[in-house]
Image (cartoon, rainbow, N blue to C red):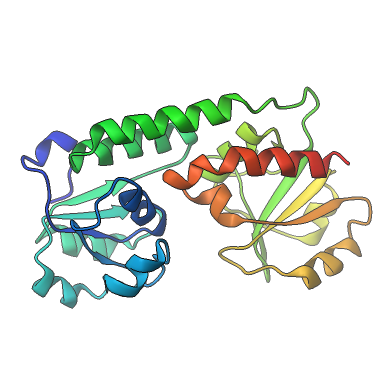
Length: 257
């Protein structure tokens, strides 16, 4: 079954499978080393878990046959990261907690819910408190730099509204040039030229942008500050959010030079 309420799980799980890298990292932060028995091949943090835990394929290519020998009593998945048909199949046999994170507030709720589900409520609440404190120390400028966040090329795809990354950009002090578009729209180089961006972010994931891509874009955007950015710090909801405010502060300073 897919849990529609965390109270539906009557006992604290002892055998957990995580199908989302950022949530796997959160489970480690919550000290669930023994309880987590399976992860994906993209769950590279922590390194010890990547080397020792059973890997069940990719986030969108889960090998459901491997579940039979693991007998999980909780599977943690995500609506955007995982494939609906696979999650529906898994839910026919095991309890699934399906997260859906579109904002920083959603991230706080997800952390708290997973804390309650796994018997780590106090540690999860403290984590949320620390993240909120660090974000409160960010002081966005009155005139926010206009930024485009690019996640793909050929075609170019950017971050739009109703996404976790968009909310992180806003919290960081940037104004998303494509906030009027929904989710992850395709754009042209002409769209970028007409967006009047102060800075453009080339994310490290899912497309691995490199220095050469900056050179290509500068031919079209000679007056724009173009940065390679850490996609994990913009898109990983969970304990990684602790590191984001300090990173955003440096990025904002760099874009304002």
